[in-house]
Length: 304
Image (cartoon, rainbow, N blue to C red; front, top):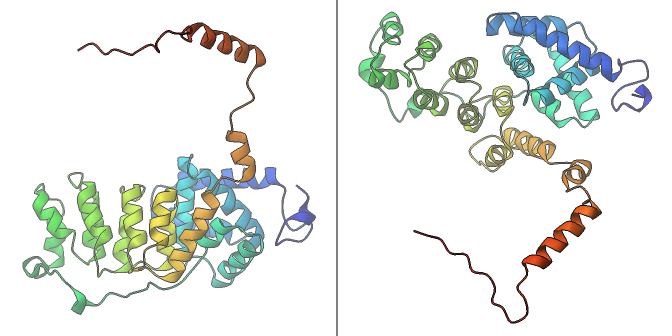
């Protein structure tokens, strides 16, 4: 790599591609060696805080492009997203990384470091459904009920707006994706509730991530984090959703563009030139199978 040709960087400011790949791999190994999501976010923040912004962008770009095929890279990208949503990275570093990503036209990393409030904030007066009987129970009692084997009771708890209750609920092995989808889709809801969904065992499921991204109560950082790994069809649906913020839709469109194959990729996927000998053999076979003059075309008969 010719460093003088790197967009958004000056000569000598960046390592070469091999060094970036190696550092991205080491960061993934470090993150995956940590047990909890909270500690992974702190570990990522600690490493990235000591690097130049453009190098952070290059490492993040490498990880984001590996995330679709590598669990370790996906875990690290999630940790970066969590660190951003928790404010563990210095605001100046985040702003510098965002500017570097824009200067390099790296839409994936630009989306990753985008920050902004949710389109809507939780307002209890907007509640369309309120389980008064369940809400009247003390917090300790509701947390105890999250360990229940009664799936109907678990579905009722999926509407709870206390992050501790939701965290315990999502741990329950009896809970299914259907109840997790209730939590991710509920409106109005708190930002912290949606964070718990993405941090749970359901957080890597496409339907759950799409539900969070479609939720207008998700702040930009959380919505963009949820878009990671979604299909082009799902991203287009978010881009066309007029119930989410303009910034969320814009980043969804950017990610759609990134996922479109480049001319080189389209050319590479075209069929390779046929072997002349194979073409000749195929022509001879077709000539043998062709009906003689005056004969009828062979009919295909299906026996019952």
